Structures are given as structure tokens and as C-alpha cells.
Amino acid sequence: MLPVRELLRSAAFTHEASDPVLVETHISWVVLAGDYAYKIKKPVRLPFLDYSTLDARKRFCEEEVRLNRRLAPELYEGVSRIVTTAGGLAMDQAGDLADYAVRMRRFGSDQRLDRRLADNTLSASDIDACARRIAAMHEDAPRAGPDGPYGTPEVVLGVVRDCIDALGDGAVAVREARRWLEDREPDLTGCFAARLAGGWVRECHGDLHLANLACVDEKIVPFDAIEFDPALRWIDIQADAAFLLMDLWSREHPGLAWRFYDTWLARTGDYDGVAMLRYYLIYRHLVRAKVDRIRLDQAPADPEERRQVARRLAIHFGGIRDLLRPGRPGLVLTHGLSASGKSTLAKGLAAEMQMIRLRADLLRKRMAGMDPFDHDSGPPAGLYAPGFTDRVYAELARLTALSLDAGWNTIVDATFLTPERREPLYALARQRGLPALCLHCRAPESELRRRIVARRRAGVDPSDADLVVLTDQMARIRGPTPAERDLWLDVDTTAAPEPGALAMQVRRRLWA
Image 1 (cartoon, helix red, strand yellow):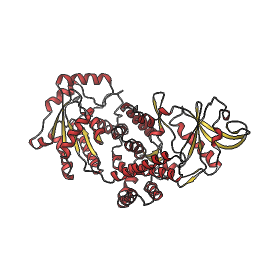
Image 2 (image 1 turned 90 degrees about the vertical axis):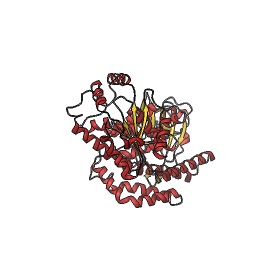
Image 3 (image 1 turned 120 degrees about the horizontal axis):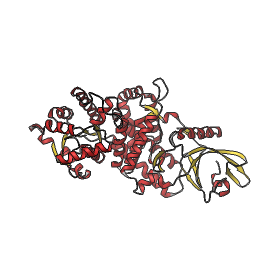
Image 4 (image 1 turned 45 degrees about the horizontal axis):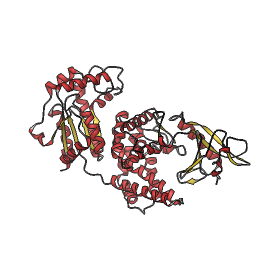
């Protein structure tokens, strides 16, 4: 084993490096020295990686730099030589080659998102920025070919089976996950094949949890993407996003977790992928459980570290069991004029109640081949024609059914001006024996007009509604039918409703 502690001296480096620090993971050592961090791969062979030879460690160091320069070129500088000198190990000096290290620009540990979360300095706007950055990364990532080795049903099912086998059947959660996978394998096989054919399997990050994200120079930067197994990074983008969602949730921040996923979905438009989310959340819990089990098997000397690892293992097993026992989902519709606060309210509720949010404004533009967040050009002719609007509401209904069938609470953010628009969504819930609710969002006309003018000046909202549209809507809007009155909840949005209080009302109405 490399005597890595010999690097904990200033003379081991060619740059200023007072009081170097060593950080250890189950597969790496990281030496923090001055303005740099050196990541050294342990000479280990595990079921999922092989760093046992010097040639392999060199190759994987080079691959790590190549991959991560796509995401964080400002951090990854290259590969350093670790050499043996008279004074001990040293970096990039004269001496006999001992090993290799990935050389990175160092940033403060308080810039990592896991630390910011622990310090209560990770804000909702940080989460939104993170979601946008990751969505852009996924959009730019190379796509896997349908005839290639990645993303096939066999591969996707295999990685979960490998995790389950590695953990053994000692834990109830693992046994239940094994049975769940066996029961659903035929359906899952078809879904995975469709995802691959649809271009959703891409060269992703592969290890996208909070400790591998940092805020550097006021930008969210993903780092430490998986280099040792291409099959673990050539994955469904839902699998990549699920890691961060799971990490936030397991750290007891479900609101931030769901805010991330909501914003990420809005940017990627991958609402069909919601059907796969539960599988990938279970998979990510299994991955972290496997890592924690390996760490326990390595018998860390510090009793507190062992307790922390054991606690994390229990959290992941609990998360798996919760996902395998979803409650009865509910359906919520919004109803109201443009600028009545529907989208703001829906976004807050989605985070509070862990809901999938489907927004008509976004869907309409995507169906027209537009980027919903591109405001450089106006809407094409026919975008709001009755026939096209019919198609938008039909697609909203399809995606709502998909989300409910996947077991997720769902909120549909649209005007739903008439009972005829609302009834097909109510029918979906009735057919499944699920509760439904309609939130009537209202504000004075003067406030609606003020909001529309301000929104159009800002140019940041996907909605194209102007004062002419508002006037037309006011002539057409219809309130609840007698059959709807028990499904109706009036919400005055003149002052922004507090999401937590509103969520309590919604829960009582849906599941009383």
C-alpha cells in the first residue's frame, strides 16, 4: 500500500503547501495541499472497479481528467506523477515513479453543497441554479446508440441486481427490493428499451450527489464524475438526477429535493421519465447502502465514524422500504386567469407535497418545437388556436395518468377555464379511485394587470399572456359546476399564500 502520509509535508510539493491534509474515501486518498487537491486511487479491486495495477490507475486518472474537464474545466488541471525521493513521496519531482494522482484546483470545503446544506446556507435559489446546470449538462451530453452496450434492459437491471447481491439478504429492505424487482422485471424491460430508443440514455455524471457539487465563483460545478466504469455513467438522465434527489431527501430536506426535481423536469421536459423515477431512487439508495457496507467492512478505526456509517446505512434501507410502499397519490388542478398566481402556488406545493408539476405553458411550447425559456422570438401562428390547445390538454391528461400510475402526487398547472377542460382530469382520478382537488386562484383585476405588465417586461416567464389575453379569459372563465363544489378550494393570491399552510389544507381536503 502506498505510504500516502509521506505526502503530508510541504517539501513533497513544488508549490506552496503548508500543513497538507489527507482525506480518505473507500476508493481514494485526497491530499489537500495549498491551492491544489491531489486525488490518488487506492490499489484496490472491488466488484465494481479495479485499481489494482499501476497501469490501471494511470489510465483511470487520465480518463477522470478527460471526463471532468467537460463539466469543470476550471478545476481539473491534469495528472501528476507521485515519485519516491530520499525524503519520502513527492509530487511532480525527480525520483522513481510510485503512482499517479489527479491534480485539481482546490476550493473550500464550505463550497461543497453537502457542507452548505449542513451549515444551512444552501438556498432555494441555489437548488434552482443546480437544477438548471445539471439539466444543461444532460442536454449537452452525448447520446447512446440503440445498438450499443449501454442502457439496455439487461445492463440497467443488472446494476441493481449487483447491488442487491452485494448487500445480501440480511436486511429486510434488500429482500423486499429483490422481490419487487422480480415482480416488475417484464414491465421494466419494456420501459428501459423505450428510454434507450428515445435518446434518454446519455453520458452523464454517474455519481451526482451533494458532495460532488460545489459553488465555485458563484457557479454550480459538478465534479468527480465516474471514470472507472462507462456503464455507470452512460445512463438514463433520470438515473443521474435521481441520485441528487435521493441525497437531498435522505438528508431530511424533501422540500429542496423536490424543488430540484421540479426545476430539472421543467428544463429537460422529460416528464415521461417520471415513470422510471421510483426505480432509480431505489437504485440510488442501494448504491449508497453498498458503499456504506464496504466502508463498514473496511473497519474504520474511529468509533464515531462507524456509528455515522451505520446510521447512513439504516437511512438508505428505510428509504428503500418507503419507496416500496407508496401511499395513495392525489391529483390537484389549478384554475384561474393568467397572472393569478397559479404557477407560483403550484411550484411551492410541488416542493411541500413532493408532487410532479405539469405546466401547460411549458408543454405547449415544447409541443410546438420551441424552447420554453427562449424569449428571443414570439410564438408561432396557431400556438393558441383551439385545435392546438386541445392537443395540449390531451397531452396534460396523458402525462397526468402516467404520473399517478407511477404513484406520485400530481399537480397540473393550467388555466382550466371551463368545466369541459377540467372534467377529463377528474375522470382520470375517478377511474383510479384517487382523490382530486381544484385550486381556484384569484386576485383583483388591477393586480392581474400589474403582474402581466411586470412579467412581460422581465421576459423570464414561459407564459405569453398579455392584457388582450386576460380580457378574453375574463369573458370565458367559468366557476365550479354543482358536481365540482366538493372539489373546489378558493385561494386568494393577492398576498402569496404560505406553501406549508396551503399544503396542510390540501392534504386535509384530499385525504380526510
